Image (cartoon, rainbow, N blue to C red):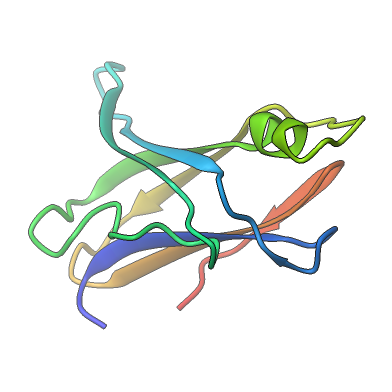
Length: 116
């Protein structure tokens, strides 16, 4: 796969993809001024329809993905959701590589890693 930034969300409590999670990508430059670069909602496969950054947009730097998981669980009738938003801050150090940041989600916790 060519250079890009992608994500997907899996809901471990439902044993499958998390459809309808709003995801926002921000760049955190050294001057402290955040810039929103992309926003989307996961589809029925728990993925965004398009990469958050494509090959031409990839740049070295610090980024943050914010997953709006509280709204996702409330829409599904969950009585308890401990998490409202899940921020994942990460660094792109080689913009020629593909970066995939999955989120494994449950109402009370989450896990992430650099995927392939």
